[in-house]
Length: 381
Ligand SMILES: *Cc1c(COP(=O)(O)O)cnc(C)c1O
Image 1 (cartoon, rainbow, N blue to C red):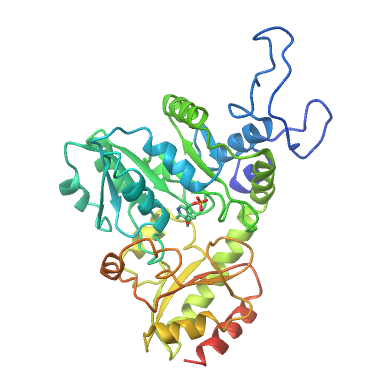
Image 2: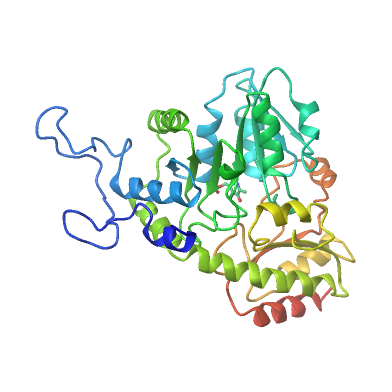
C-alpha cells in the first residue's frame, strides 16, 4: 500500500458487530468475560481498547513498523522510552531539542540518576567521541525545534548500532508523510500526535512505533504498568486526523516553501531557517531523508530586539500567537519565552535561539493571505 492509501485503510476494518465504517469510540473501562479468562482479547481498558488498537495498527503502517504504542501525550511516550533505561545509564541527545523533552530528561530523570548530555550531532561523526560506557540511548530530533537543523538519521543509527545502543527519533516535525526513521535504521520513532498527525489542534496524544516485536512487548508492558494511556475519544480524533495527513502536510510544505523564500528577501528579515534552502548547512541530508522540507519556518529580524519580535508576534491576524504546531491553521510563536523557556538562556543562545527568533507553523490556508499578514506585521518594526 502507498502512503495515501495507508492513511485511509491500514489496520482499519468496518466494525464487525455493526458494520460501522468509522472506528467506533469504545468508551468502556472493562469487557464482559464468558468465564474467567474467556474473553475476546480485551480485559481492561488500560491494557487494551479497540479504538486505540486500530490507531496503533494504522500508525505502525504509516512508519513501516511492526507495532505502535499510543500514549496520553508525546511526553508520556518519551517517558516510556526512558523507562527502558536504569539509573546510571546515559542518554546522548541532540542539542537543539524540544524544551519539554529536555526538561523531562534533566529535571525528572536527572534526580533519579539518569545522565543526559546534549551535543552537536549535525556532523554525525561527532557521535563516535560522545559515546561512553554508560550510553544506552541516542535521542535525535530532525528537523530540530526551532532552529530547523537536520540530523543524518541513517549515519547516526549506523554508529549507534555498531555500539549496540538504541536510537529513538522524535519525528514530530517531519510527520510520517515526509520521513520514516525506522527505514533509516532507527529502533524507535516517537510522535507528538498532538501536532501533524492529529493535525487539527484539538487533541493531545503521543505514540511510539517500533520494528522489533520484543521491544514492542517491553513498551506495551511499560505502558500498561505505568498507565499513561490515551482515552478512546482522543484515539478517534487522531484516527480522523490521519485520514488527511498527506493532503495537509503536502499543502503546508508548499506554503512553507513560498513563505521561506519570501521572508529570505524581505528587508526587515536577517535570516530564515528552513531546510529547503540550497545553502542550509545540511540541505543535502534533508533532501536525502525527507520527501519535502516540512511546514516549519523560523526567522530572525535584522533589528533583532525582543521589542521588535514582540511587535510582530502581537500584530498578525491569521497567524495566531500560540504554542504548538502542525495544525491546519498557521501559528506564530516565540521559542525563547514559550516552547523553550525551560532551557537556560546561555544554552539557547549557544544554538542560535535568540530572544528575537520567531517560529512559524505554516497551515493550509491560502498562501497569499498568509504572506500579506506577515508583511503587515513586519511593516511595524
Ligand atoms: C510537542 C512536542 C513534543 C511533546 O509532545 P506533547 O504531545 O505535547 O506531550 C515532543 N517533541 C516535539 C518535537 C514536540 O513538538
